[in-house]
Amino acid sequence: MRLKINKTWIVLGVALVVGGGAAFMANSYLRAQVEEIESRGKGENVKLVVAKKDMPKGATLGPDSLAVRNVPREWAHSNAVTPEQFDRIDRGALAYPAKRGEPLLWSQLEGDKVPTFSARVGAGRRAVTVPVDEISSISGLVEPGDRIDIMVTVRREARQLAFILLQSVPVLATGTKVEQGNDGRDGSRRTFTTITLDVNAEQARQVIAAREIGKVTALLRAPGDRGAVSGSRDDAAALLGLASPTVATARRGVQIIYGGTARTQAIAPLPGAAEARASAPAAATVTAPVAAAPAGVARAGLVAASSN
Picture 1 (cartoon, rainbow, N blue to C red):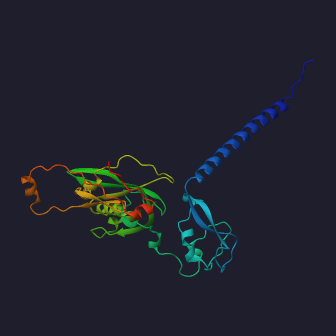
Picture 2: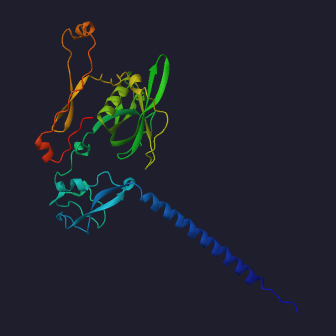
Picture 3: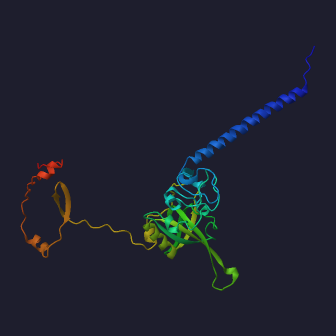
């Protein structure tokens, strides 16, 4: 007697196996995506002020209603309040409701408490604005908080030289400017994007020089990309017409010891000293004795140098 196989059960079994395999693969893919997002979120974080609870319009702000939370830098709002700015909002009031756990924005506050632009410039830093031609750049897609590389194109000895001047420069602000062409027709108008950069004093000097004598192009970086790229020139200062820093000539001096502390004091040459040294006979080398340390030095626990 032959066993009769029902084809319906075979098709059902195959469908269950295929469906289970597809579900397993989809689950594995989603899990990998979640792990990748979490790993990216564990990168560079910034601290922002968030609401501890849901607060209605007019609620008073203070330590009891606000907290500090770590947020990935690429997700942080450029208008969010930071812990360093808490003193400016303490005892303030909300102009709009705030949700629990969400970053507090300056636009949610009542009154004129929004900090000035200079408050965003750190100590020792400078904000410099560069007009970037949208035709040769990234068409105004740069936003505050992005990082860019500054490429400069200059003409030297009948050649066009393009080199990277600065790398991974933070963008503080952006804007748009429209200029009319020389012939005054609308078709000749050109749009420029102004980019305000966060640089130090020396970098600001280089950017200003590049803006005057060359063409500046902004290269947008991916979020979290801080690596250095090849292509920067060591002679960038010379290409921009900036004098390289000179090394100060070392001056001769003698070492003087005050209470166990050694200091070097430079000696200015006396008039006619060179002629006197040329005519004077060679002198024997004399080793001066080391003076004994004062009693106060020993009481302070300092060890006086011994002569050999």
